[in-house]
Image (cartoon, rainbow, N blue to C red; front, side, top):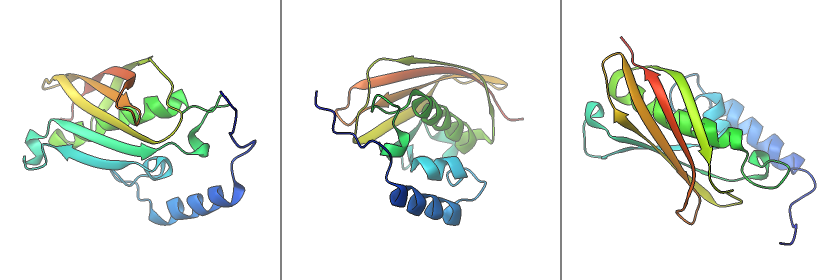
Length: 155
């Protein structure tokens, strides 16, 4: 495989991105700094369901040079963060702000470029604790990482 990655991130692109993130972020769900930095787009499904009945939080974002590790693939910490965010935003959408109690991530394949999709959902919803999973797919639709987590529910 030919190595056509840049030696460094494009400084002008990083500066422009950071200025946009600084100007557009708020410390609120969907718009907090890190979500803006990653370029996350949020969708809650089913779209027609009331908030309390949402089943999935789908995130999408593009792999950029800023998010790659030294091998040129999407950094595992970014993958884990996106999966955690997909679960946390679903908890918030249906019940209010919760908290991650534990998180386990299995990395299955690298994501080198393109649009990443991440879907968080409940595997068992409880009043005080819930069990969740999030699946991260590359642009080919193949599973690249799976996270399972225990969440403290609000209240």
